[in-house]
Image 1 (cartoon, each protein chain N blue to C red):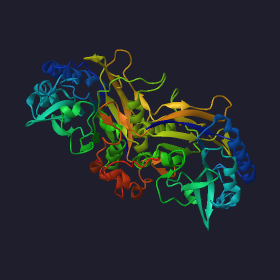
Image 2: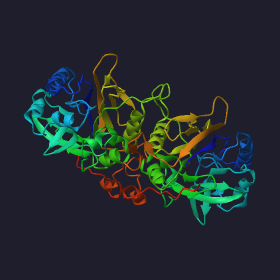
Image 3: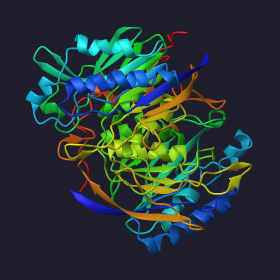
Amino acid sequence: MNRKLRVSAVTPDIVIGDLDGNLARLHNALRAIEWTGPYLAVLPELATSGYVFTDIDEARALSLRADDARLTALADDVPADCVAVVGFAEVDGDTLYNSAIVIGDGKVVGTYRKAHLWAAEPEIFATGVEAGTVIDTAICRLGVAICYDNEFPELPRRLALRGAEVLALPVNWPLVDRPEGEHAPETIQAMAAARSSQLATVIADRRGTERGVRWTGGTAVIGPDGWIKATPQGDETIATAVLDLTDSKAIGDRNDALADRRPDLYRDLVESGEAATDIPD
Amino acid sequence: MNRKLRVSAVTPDIVIGDLDGNLARLHNALRAIEWTGPYLAVLPELATSGYVFTDIDEARALSLRADDARLTALADDVPADCVAVVGFAEVDGDTLYNSAIVIGDGKVVGTYRKAHLWAAEPEIFATGVEAGTVIDTAICRLGVAICYDNEFPELPRRLALRGAEVLALPVNWPLVDRPEGEHAPETIQAMAAARSSQLATVIADRRGTERGVRWTGGTAVIGPDGWIKATPQGDETIATAVLDLTDSKAIGDRNDALADRRPDLYRDLVESGEAATDIPD
């Protein structure tokens, strides 16, 4: 079955430490996308709190339970027939997670806890127990992962094998050096992962600078062919594109991105323990 | 341990059907790189035969046993202290393989049979029994894969986990449409794979056209950071670069491209059978 899905990647202003203000900005951002008519809207990682925490106490003060009414109230402003994915700092008992909530049809339809933590995140967050997740929503079978998760090629592949049609990827990508004319390295990894599994990917990144960390501004919609279909232009904060989705993973007449796999030959990928270190001197 | 390794990706002329002529061109190409002083030289897929076979009979007539003296004699022209990887059409009994031979120190040190076959290749070639291979050579622990193999992100990852320091990738990439300013899609996949596993990749592609198939000209040396370090310029047929190799897979102070993996969460990657198809209509 072929069908078209209009999606938006959204990069609203987010202010570290301003939980109430960020929630208000997220309400505004969700209202602002309604005119584009998206069926999927993706917003950044840790959009309720900001990213560059001073310490765990600050993170805790900015965290919300997944069922906190201040968070779930975002559902009121998700456009009709749209599913929104929003990163937030989650607290569950004494434990914090770097999470994303999936909201649609006026309610929460899923949450995901980041499985691969970056830099100082392990000082704050516990890891999730699933490497990305797949959630059946009214609009598509939706993959969800967060930022550094997608630098592990195992993860988008796994979600595609589980039938994900689109990957929602909230991120906070710190800007790194790159050769002139090149995309950000994380963008290249996302383009390659999308093409390898013909899995469209919707990336919401940050803009500007937070406590000295400059963001990449990698917000983009990547098609199932791996090419960038939309990015925000100039001062825009929304990138919208129509994805052509199909159940087929065919590459030309003779090949298939998933069926051509030879999983019996990939056992190394699931074996724990150290990588081989018997490298000759 | 850090060390530097000078490598060359080589794209000699190859003429479909001209086995003797191609072998002579390969001897010439190996002699021609000596002045660059490489420790690794990679030449294209099916460099002895050409790629666009009319039928299996033609392929068979152009195939060589891995121990055929016409093939192993290439060792005579591999520069001292250099390991060369050359794609060839292999015959073993009645069976053909799309293979690569690894030659160094005057002898054959390994062969690899392509595991993921593209387009009409299954009408001609049997598949190999390993998804890429790792060979200990005098100059490094060398990963070897062929063309379409590397579009499966499982494969370069697997080789990195087995300690490969450099991936030698003979290819024949048919040119496909791409947006202006973008690399070939296979190049993007190779850049992403290199960065994901910090695995330098040396790609030898074809140039020009063969029986109506136009080649991408994707010959390149990609560093362990995922950036292209060298490509042939203008009419050049060799790209040479010095790779900085290290045993470390560290990303900054806190992360590690392999140690941060969570292999227990990647079981889907090794399960056979159909991908999930319960996609809602």
